[in-house]
Amino acid sequence: MLKLYDYLPSQNGWKARVVLGLLAIPYESRLVSIFEGESHTEAFLKLNPAGAVPVLELEDGRAIAESNAILIYLAEGTPFLPADRYANAKIMQWLFFEQYHVEPVIGSLRFWMLTGRLERNQAMVTAKREAGARTLAALERSLTGTPFLVGDTLTIADIAVYAYGHLAEDCGYALADFPAVLAWMDRVRNAIGPGYPVHVYGIDPHSGT
Image 1 (tube, rainbow, N blue to C red):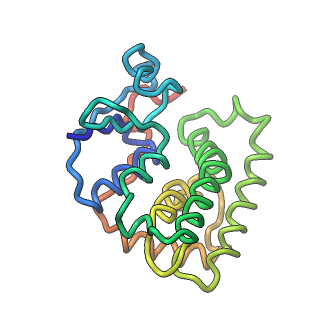
Image 2 (cartoon, rainbow, N blue to C red):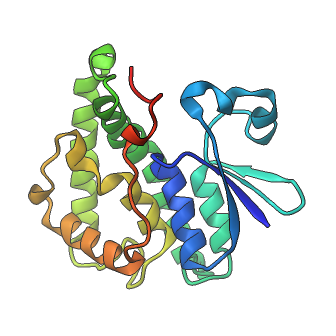
């Protein structure tokens, strides 16, 4: 059986949980206590030398790190990753966009705010906020007139961008200023369904400063 090394408040882990669930793929969840250093143990670093979750361990012991790489592996041959060459390339475009413009900007700001780390990172906050606003504006332009990021159906591109994108209000962005993004978020939420909650950092007593 597949094993997902995970940390519940991580939206990178959430992406993998969603795709595993939507595809009805059985897996074993292995929770990693990242704030206690478990992701930097020798055993974990053999799975992912970067020391980050999630990691998907295959039945034969091989491992795949980086959340979007996991999504690609899981979705291969399914409607969530179309075989059409252009559509496939567009999905990759959005997966790269997410890891460059969404997760390290909105995801980082949210993490700092919700775990009491904003002040210690104050020198980077203004640039991050401006970058996040540009990210949401780019999404607004891209989603005007189209139901999903790539065509008319949900793909792993939507799941990846939505993961941290739909939590932008947690770090001070007014999503009401981006009506096409809000409408897209509603469509993604409805397509995914209610079985994939967002876990707050507070469930981990070690997450605070």
